[in-house]
Image 1 (spheres, one colour):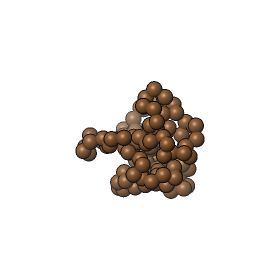
Image 2: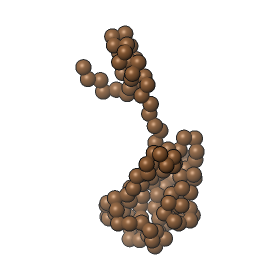
Image 3: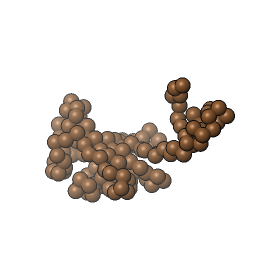
Image 4: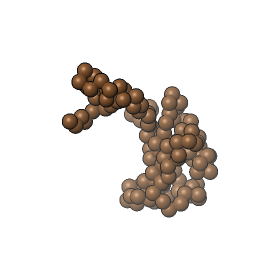
Length: 128
């Protein structure tokens, strides 16, 4: 049998047929992950290596789980001098400002140097 459903749904479906398996599936937890898209003036980011990005180990208990340096991967997606990044965050009730501050600290820049694209629920995207 193959179930292509989240663990909690599968647990509910299997409860009467396979109660032991259902109980194990109910123990699986999911981590919330938010995504921020950030643009920054390349001149302000002296410390970014020519890399794909980076991951932050879970034991560090940081807001940021990882960052992709999109401009390094896709050079034609941004104008010259602009670094685009995708930031994966465990916000857990915190605002995106907390993630921006943590990213700024990690990149050794001031948070005002990071202009990030706001979601459609917010006002308008930041200008670079």
